[in-house]
Image (tube, rainbow, N blue to C red; front, side, top):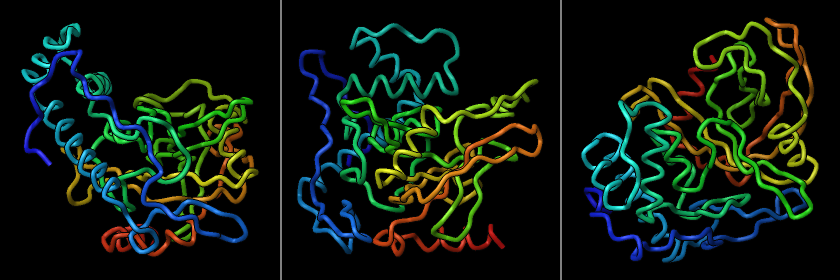
Length: 291
C-alpha cells in the first residue's frame, strides 16, 4: 500500500481499471444448490486475489486523501482536463467528485457488476464512506440501498444491499445475529431530514422486484451494514461493514404504522458458510443492540 495518492498521469497513460475476476474461489454446495463462497477457511486465495486486495487498499487511501485535500483534487482535475470545483464541494457532491477523480486515475477495482463474492474483499472489512463501496465493486449506488444487475432477457437481481437504517419507523429489524428483515426501497417518509407531506405505497418494481427474483432464483446478495458510534469510524461517527452473502427466504407486504401505506419487507438469512466469520466486536455490538 502507498501512504499517499500517486501523482496523476497523462490521459493516454491511464492504467485500465481491473475487471472483476473469479479468483481464489471454490464452489460449495449449500442446501441443494451451488454458491460461490469466499472466506478464509473455505477457499484458497491466489496471488492475484491478494494483488487485488492490495489495489483496494491503495484506492481507499487515495479516496480518503482526495476527500480531505482540495488542492490535490484541483491538481488531479487540472492534469486530466476536468472542470474545476464550483463553490464549496461537500456531502454527496464531494464523494461523487472524488470517485470520479479516482476513475480517471484508473484506481477503481472490480469494475464489472457481479453476483456473489467480490475479489479482494473479506467478511468484516470496514469502509468509511458510501463512495468507497463503489470504487471497490461492493455496491455501485451512492444513495440507493439496493444495487441491481440485469440479464440479457431483462430479468433483474439484487447484487448487494446497504442496511443503513434510513427508513425511520419502517427500518430493518434483527431476527437473530444471522437473520434480519429489510424494508424495500421507495417512498421513504423521512428523506434528507425532511418529512414528506404525502407517502404512497411501495411498489414491487426496481430493487424490490430484484430482491424477489433473488428469492425465486436462489441468488445470493451481498449485505453491507452501517454502524454508528463504533470504534474506527469516520469523522461523522459511522462506518460500513461488509457482512457477507445472504439469501432472501421470503417477502411480504405490510402496513407502515405512521402513514397507513404499504411497504415491502424481505427476510434475509446469512449463508451457512459465512456465519462463523463475523468479527468479535460486531458480535458483541449486535448482541448488545438487540438486548
